[in-house]
Length: 241
Image (cartoon, rainbow, N blue to C red; front, side, top):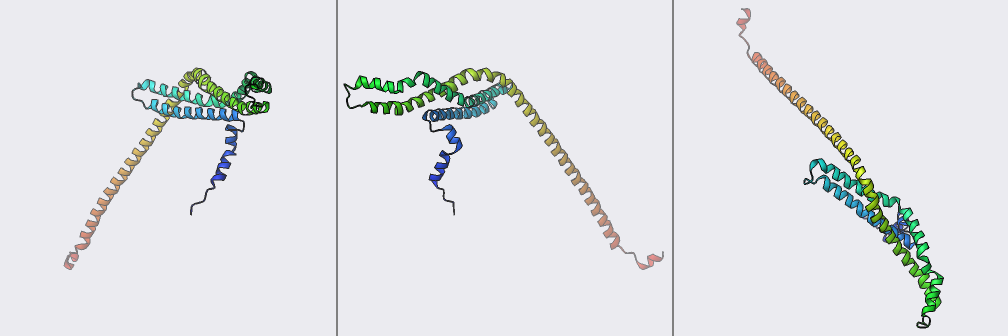
């Protein structure tokens, strides 16, 4: 009987896991920023594997340049994934600092009071408490989340991908190319050693089979001679001769 899976408990365990709390915390701004970053690095990781494989096996690229192109794609993908993940803490802190410095004043009690004073005559149904509640709680959360996503995408897709990665990827491609060539030479050497060992084993087996066959033929001939010798018995009178 198949085990019964409690979907509700499984969902709670996933949501309350350390990984999910790290990438999707209760703070809406950090949650939006974490999801945006996780989405971009996942896409870049998949692209890295695809483009590296494609370049390495692309027959239209000259063979002497093929490894460097593949190494360059691998280096670009590596930095596009690793650098944004390393900068996640800096992104969160910088996003909070930028928001508090330039945008938080637009969602304060003072801003709510100014809005109330402007609309109280034309919209008497809105009270100061209603405006404060919407502005300092709901709108504040959406603003932080939106800025977090924008800030994350700017850092990961523009600053990292267009400025930092190209600066590091090209020099790294030479090193990666050398590693790939060294790995290929090692594999080729191992393949030759295995092939030579298999050839020696095959020749040894053939030699043993040949020797065994020759021994079998000799043994058969000896058996035939023994059979003829034993089968032929001279007459009794020839024994006295």
